[in-house]
Image (cartoon, rainbow, N blue to C red):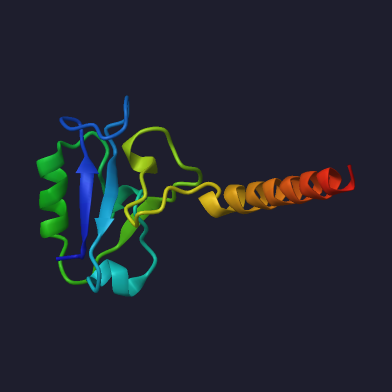
Length: 124
C-alpha cells in the first residue's frame, strides 16, 4: 500500500459539512512516511489527476488501491488545527503549552513567597 489511512467521503464525513478525504494516519516505515511530504490531517484533493470531490469513502479507497506504483497526490495542507477529529494529534501530545511551562514558574513563585514570609517572621 501507500502507507497511510484515509477518512471521509460523502457517506462518512469526518469533518462537519465537509465530505473531503483526509489523511488520518501515516504508517511508520510505509511509503508515505519514507517520502516525508504527506502529513496527518492533510486533505487529499486528487489522486493521479482524478478529483476526489463528492466520492463515497469506499470509492476513494478503490482509487488509492488502483493508483499504481507512481502516485501523484494533490493535497491541501492543514494550516491551523481545526475543531473536531482532524485537529487530534496521534503522537500523544496535546499541543499548546507544556504543563511544566506553567508549573515551574508557579512553583518558583510559591517558594520565593514562603522564603520571604519566613525571613519576615524571623525579624519580628
